[in-house]
Length: 439
Ligand code: SAJ
Image (cartoon, rainbow, N blue to C red; front, side, top):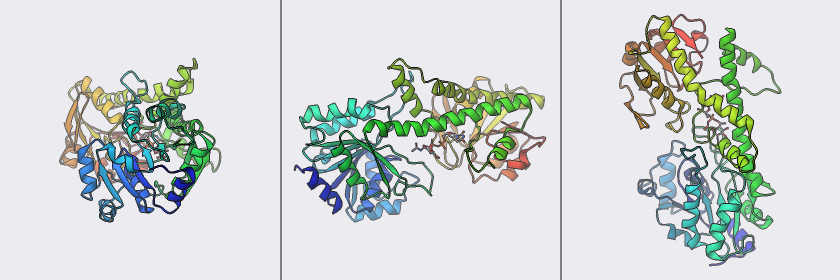
């Protein structure tokens, strides 16, 4: 099969192009479903057999994708999954949505991108388009993905095949902005690449934003997430400064947020979690280091955010001290361990650091999280407390680390002996309350 650019664009317009999505996780599955909803026949490729089996049996493992939706698409023959990359030899378009974590050394880990590209390379053919969605440093698509795809196939990018970058903008748990309606930036290796990528994505997504190169698209994503990371670090440091000044940082932020222009509200917390915000900016600072430039804002923000779990444990220790209890031997209940409210993801969650530090100081640590039944990572092996209120009553200190919205905070305030509220989850009822210490 070998489509020309015009033939490929036509296939997109009549929704006859066959689509592949490599990596059917929190980005890839919503994307696959959105392409299938638009009428494309989609095959999801993932090495994890249980994910493949669940999709093919009409189930979903992603909170944002309803199982019934998957089932309907699978039964209509619009969506299926496989772990066999050879299935990609029949597709006209492939999105790569694989993780881009950090190595233990703090350097970018491109192994998933390279593995996906190398697995796809044997099935490259004339007239296919490949779009990388994984957040990464500027230059990755051109320097790493392009040679992997073109060297093996001998195909020429922009003529024989097309290659672009389009940053994912999935916000797990969000209902108002979805894959369908969130504007999608796309940058091609060549103008032809961008034209083809735009022709594809605009069939399924409401707004496509073409930019002049894949580097601009890669950098766009890093600006978005670096902006968040630095502003979160700024309010985290504000919390520390307000603590020294004996000023209520939450009241300061609320009053600043009344400014209708020129201000954007961020709130302090026990640290920075997730697989995007703490990580993407470090891809950028790493790349700049290779160009002998130090991205000082990113490095300082990362240092401040990384210190917040330790600062949180010091607040817990001081609060217990004020109640004549040493941290050592005290029962501390951590409330909420997901990296942000109302999701079931603990990746990079500051709760893990807080628990680890508490255990290091010989506190008796337990946790409760309605979304996370057990924690088995790093040196932590705990199960969520089965009876929340009994656990609250038994604790010497309850530390609200992730403010899930389905907690009955009034009941928790009533039952607890002492609360360290790192998220202002108690709101005004926690302000100046004898049992409550706020960040
Ligand atoms: N956090 C704070 N204070 C804040 C905001 C967040 O401490 O004011 C913490 C959260 O508790 C969490 C971490 O930062 O631990 C990240 O929170 P997040 O709201 O940024 O959530 P993410 O990581 O799911 O970010 C996603 C990102 N989406 C993509 O990367 C595609 C991000 O770009 C979005 O802006 C963000 O969702 C969003 O807007 O909610």
